[in-house]
Image (cartoon, one colour):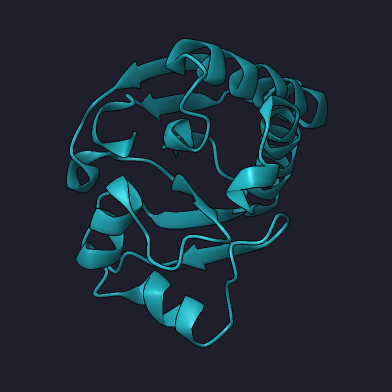
Length: 158
């Protein structure tokens, strides 16, 4: 399994799926997710307005970038309320995200981790905790599969 970090522009990231995270109590997407929503002409905002995606824990939205990005698909995972989010919740989220990725049959994965939801934790600790659970679940389900995981740097997503 290959995992690396970088700060590429959203439009230049070539993956099977680009994964973002959105809290339930944040009415409008912010940071990179806000930029993505702008690139996709408000696709996520429209889903939120229609009640089709709430951002609650366990919810997700799969978007088609329609050639606006090099990523084939965009997945947005709900975090639940910010006040309820913790390192334990992050670790559980890593498993849930991995299972969703496995259902989509993706091997090249880009992750914009929810750094700004836990601002008092170091980005490296958050990245390590998430990838530990994420990689364990991917490997457990498909032990012989090759996965390439790209995490975006905290940068503007923080």
